[in-house]
Amino acid sequence: MRQGRLPDGFGVRIDPSVRTYSGGRVLIGGSPTRMLKLAPAAAEMIGDGFLEVTDPKTAVVARRLLDSGVANPRPKLLPSTDDVTVIVPLRNNAEGMTRLLAALRGHSVIVIDDGSDIPYAPPPCAESRCKVTVLRHEVPRGPAAARNTGLRAATTEFVAFLDSDVVPKAGWLEVMLGHFSDPSVALVAPRIVALDAESNQVARYEHSRSSLDLGRREAAVHARGTVSYVPSAAMLVRRSALLDEGGFDETMEVAEDVDLCWRLEQSGWRLRYEPAARVAHDHRVSFGKWFGRKMFYGTGAAPLAARHPGQVAPLSISPWTVAAAVLLATLSRLGLLGSMVTVAIAVLRMRRVFAELDQPTRVAAIYVARGFAAGLWQLASAMFRHYWPITLLAIIFSQRIRKIAIAMALAEGAADWVKHREAGGLDPVRYVAFKRLDDAAYGAGLWQGALRARSVEALKPTFSS
Image (tube, helix red, strand yellow):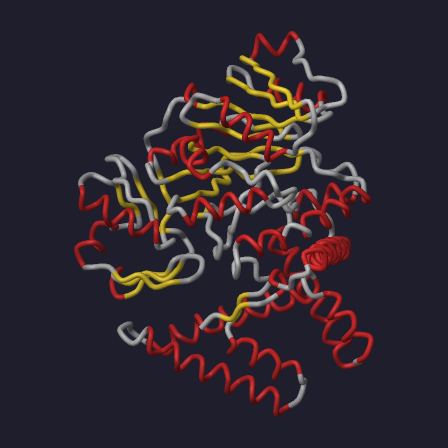
């Protein structure tokens, strides 16, 4: 990790999901879940869950809390918005560009016209709102190349990448800029919400479950975390960090944003997802375009797996969870007993980790149960998203598997609806139907990409201890 002292006045707050033990000296939480042990003096600094940096010692503790994933940043200092250039890749979407410029009042904007059929010229009214520079690729080279052209042309310390089909909400930039008072942060991304939330059934589903919307909870961005990447449709970056990494990979037609996030992480930079900043996206809401886009996203797994072996696994799960789930799926008394024994063994193993805590068996049981539930969720999701062709064959040839699969498809879909539902979204029945179509499209793209690459790397699960 890159080290840079957090400035005085920078704050960190313990995440609400984190549990404290032993008088605040042991914290358990983060993604993936980990246990952090603090010295008594460090525990006293945190007090009611908030720590403000005032000297080198508090700076060290704050950094440790952030890097362990148990705390979130609360910066008070922020760079000026004058230090930001907005870069927009554009191809044949002058209408969307006009809408975007209307929301970017006062900003410096570089538009990269990536071979539009009619060369783009900003409307006269845009000049009164923004300083607009247009650069053109005579032949389309793709959004990654367009962003890199803008990155090289910009001169400010920070650049914001926005696609031409988004509209930023008020305050979007200021909310994200504060994170860069941490000198080790290279990238911050907002929550991407729906511009059209109710026009038809697809729009209502995307309002709740868009692939671009990473949810309500703030988080560090890292490959094995809850938020493993952020989409390039809207992101704010430290320009020097991207230049050092060579910008976006122009050979990638899809998932170039995932690749960039992971390369930055591997170089020791920190990345943040900040849902308090919001940018609205004009989702594809005709069924054909929506389904095709989901397939397109799936094709990105194979090139990612080639560049980042072991990080694209559809499933990362404990062998104990797999064993318990398989035994449970037999629907027999012996299977149920075997599943219970497997879970009990896992609790005893986990108890050793929590031996220093009060009631270590109880704590171990809680976290094993949570891990088992999360593992079942992963298995169910992977069955119908990444591995649905295999699941379909199993359903055809086994009546028992058919019953289990139908029950899991409904249960996983309903649980997903509870987790992601939004006001104005679909009812549970329609949501589950669209979720299964969403998964089928992505999985089809995943298998198509794997066959094209002649590699199963993107389909291989990984097993955690």
